[in-house]
Image 1 (cartoon, rainbow, N blue to C red):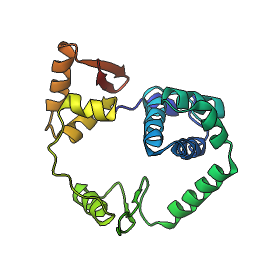
Image 2: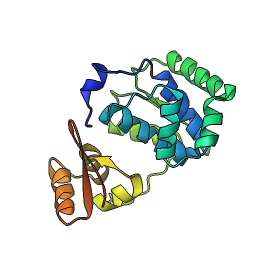
Image 3: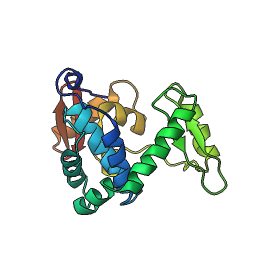
Image 4: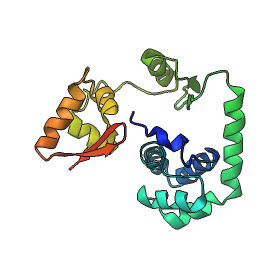
Length: 196
């Protein structure tokens, strides 16, 4: 993933906690809203070196993610959101996995499962199935289909989601950009792609 390392040398966030709390506030508007907001924060911090550790900056990012900014502000300042963050923090401290780790919440009789950054694809897949996910059997999307579904993506994400080996993801993105179907969004250490 493209990351601008200058964020750590010049104006690094004081803490990641405000952004984590903000994601919980965004989730109050639904799972899709929470996912969009998390993506906006990740790009803002890591690709654009935005200092996202204060309420006004976090609220501005909520607007950019298409959230109801006033509702977000209320949820961001809510004691319930802060208590949810404290519970998450306690739970995360109790696991024995290196961070970042992901908890897959069991549905339809499935079990909660944790996976970590050292676990391979097969472990993540097995954990998702144990949590209640069903493999769709659907074919991998093409690049435009992936961007339509997920929004702006890095070349590495296109490679994984579209199952394009080696440099084929970048080559396909550039080909589509040459046809004015994709737009390249340059960042310091690479690029992101979005539909034109």
